[in-house]
Image 1 (cartoon, rainbow, N blue to C red):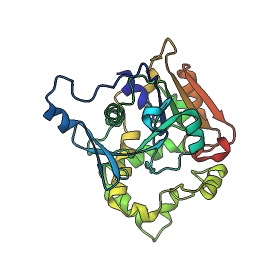
Image 2: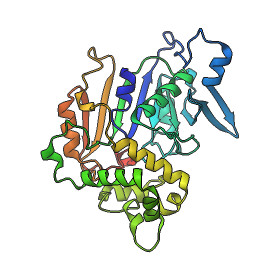
Image 3: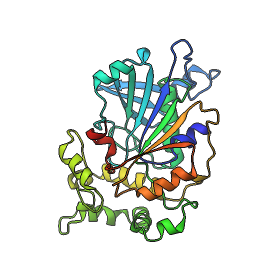
Length: 319
């Protein structure tokens, strides 16, 4: 399905814009068909609010927690789903003021991906399940059937994609690091948990303001952006948090059942558009690889920020 493939071409901080016209908006199909019995429909497609939390129940019984911002959905011109990245949640500090959303008529939907925040974990997590979760969430909240665009902000690149040229990756230390980490996370998770939570060696610095992974601009963002919560040793000590991150990393960097670089333009008539935003100074996702992706898939509109880092979505200077 086009929606599934486009939604999760890359794993990162993604935004999905569904533009709707009130005169043309029809309720999206829910998980069960309209011919299903009411008892069957209610058991697989439900929304609930408990203790102030908003959640949807997915077809496999898991719950996804979500939060809404901006204008009311019924009064919106644009409906945007924000998909948070590694280690974040629906509480991320998304830089869109209420005044701006009011002016443009933007309804913003943020949610906790599987295992993060208040959402249930998914023991069978995969790239496909991530896309399915987004699709079910959009259907149950009846966001509309038209996908107006996809914006991927510093999306992750998987070194297992067979189309990536060896001359661009052979000397990239991230390639072996990601493969080693996936192997250890899958077969020796206890060792990884110990390494990131022990206090004898400065191991946690790999995730906490390490200049090897964060550019100078990223370090400024970490220092000056209110509400940004970086992973810390205290958070990683919670096994639920650690397990969510471990499963997320494995899904992102294991071998996929398709190569995104083989995709053809799903919007040949320009009925929708796909954008990538990349920081030139990004030390997590190399700009050279992102440029290759943009050349391989010329139907994606590529935007490069000269002094941007990996935390581009949190950088107020880019707003």
